[in-house]
Length: 241
Image 1 (cartoon, rainbow, N blue to C red):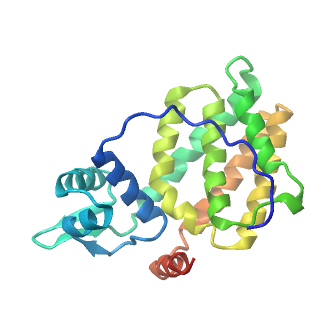
Image 2: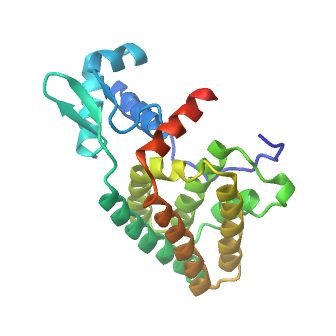
């Protein structure tokens, strides 16, 4: 990773106690997002329990939760399987994301009392930096990209919008990670995020919303090109790190 300054990140919610099932659930979602588990992979509850050092009960609870969210399915007498990508659902989630983020952009430029300026300042510290100070770490930039979009919606001051947006973000995470396997995409993301932030700083809501829409549509177009071969290549690259 290039030498860059480490800015303050957007604030996170206060820590809450998590059960073993919650921990297993979060770990399995990370496994999917980081390509340790890819569509078509099969596994048993015992295998997951042994790997994570927990009993079958929290594993089963976590898997049923992931099943409800469309990540996995149970196979009769043969364990579990990671479900194939549902591209129609991804299209719908990107459409919803676009509505939420463009609405937030307008609010950030017009509703001064509710806007979280500190959160916006933290985004500026990450994205409005000289080219020499940009990160080239694909994992880091993918995480910052996700936090950028979540922080924009959170900074707009509508907690319910932010909650729905976080749910959408969770469900498209693996697709977005695939989008950050190329250096050119990282460079483009820095440029586009900078333009969006400058428009918000100047209170140009229509321009900020237009830039966000174009930015999200570019990612949405990339989703349509994804193949299972790319997913397996991403897993190979992840295992090689």
